[in-house]
Length: 57
Image 1: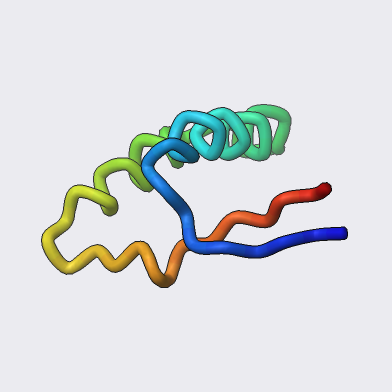
Image 2: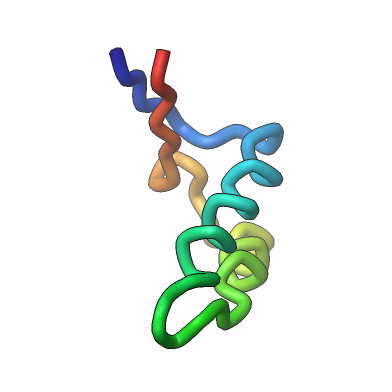
């Protein structure tokens, strides 16, 4: 069963690692995508309602 919910600050580190793993072995390689996401989260217009995580149970 998979549950989807809004991201929580406690998820940030896990998501950062996932983003890194998703890009590291691509043809273009890792280009600081996780850092970009972290920067976007600091923007005053950021709304965590639009960022979700899927959890497999």
